[in-house]
Amino acid sequence: MPKRVLFISNGHGEDNHSAYVIRTLRELAPDVEIAAIPIVGEGNAYRRLGVPILGPTKVLPSGGFTYVNRWLLVRDIRAGLLGLTWRQFRAIRHYGPQYDLVHATGDSVGQTCAYLTGRPFISFISCLSALYEGRLQTDFVMRFVVRSSRCQAIVTRDPYTAEDLAKQGFDKVHYGGIPSLDWLLPHGKDLSLKPEVPMVALLPGSRMPEAVRNFKLQIQFVEESVRLIGHDVQFRAALVPALMAEIGALAAEVNWNYKTGRLWRQLEDGTIAEILCYDDAFNDIVYHTTLVIGMAGLAVDQAVAIGKPVIQIPGEGPQFNYAFAEAQDRLLGLSAQTIGTGPANHETLKEAAQCLQKTLYDKAYLSACVDNGRARLGIPGASKRIAQLILDHLQVEPMRVSANAMKQKRGTITP
Image 1: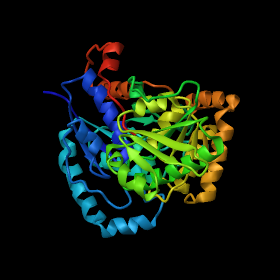
Image 2: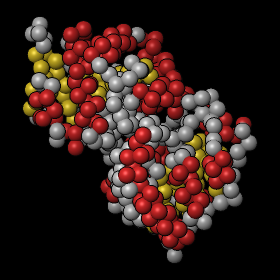
Image 3: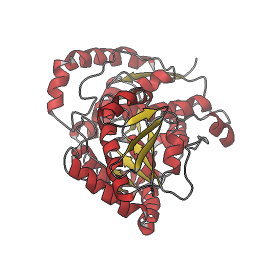
Image 4: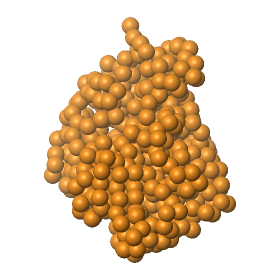
């Protein structure tokens, strides 16, 4: 009888981490049966892979970011959070015992859900890091859950956190990494780049409608940058399809022109500000960029991990606001520069443009970001490390798949 693994995750980024592990797990052990219970949102990362979703799903106002703004919790409750939580609890108790192993991705909420299944589980604490404070502070619930006999392994996203937990006396700790890095390979997309001119990637995030607001700020940032730097820089935007579909209306709002992926505007001095937009070139844009203007979470982490510096411009949220950006500063270290302490205004955007001008040609800083990204976020291979850990605890022998074959099967990451 095939072994069965249940993936539980409590967040959009956590869904994505799990989805990349599932891709590799399917390559290594196609006979393993997989299902998922996403606690936050609709679990679209699982749906794109055809993974069965067990239990109810619903998009709530906070998008899972109540820790950034506690008032959003009130809106979630009004939108049906308590009823949704009860139905999800019942699904976890009903379906959980039917699986051989549970893989939980997230904080204490996701890990507690795994514990409540009554089954052995692997705890991937992908959103927690000792890099934020120098030491990982865990609450009572988390400590109880991961120290239980049913917790087979604690997996961290960065090597520093693995070392920190081991020093704190936690056993069964493994460094995993960022699973999506294994797919962060260029695909040869033509970005129409001008040789020798630095390219700047615009990453406004993937959550709608927040991504629309973020991209509007980034367009205004490009205006300020072109006024300051001129044509000595080129801009490429990595957008999700839902945002790409709204660019025409967005361009009209900010008095720009748009046609077939090209945004442009003639400035007061006659200079043309231009952004080329793609919804299918995230890998190539991040791989070839000199610097990232980031208003996202996981997408920014991926860029920093491969050595790219990021300038962060806080938005209104619910995800990407100043509190989130400041936390990213602590996580990413010298690779991240955050401009302003609240939702960006005209002065913030001018300051961000000045920061861009200063940073683009600072060769020592750009080189330091390469080393910093690797030291803080580790190396590729996470999806295979975690998938192999799952198979070890299932006692399933993986298929022999060559590295070249795995690379050929890998598709484009979406930000």
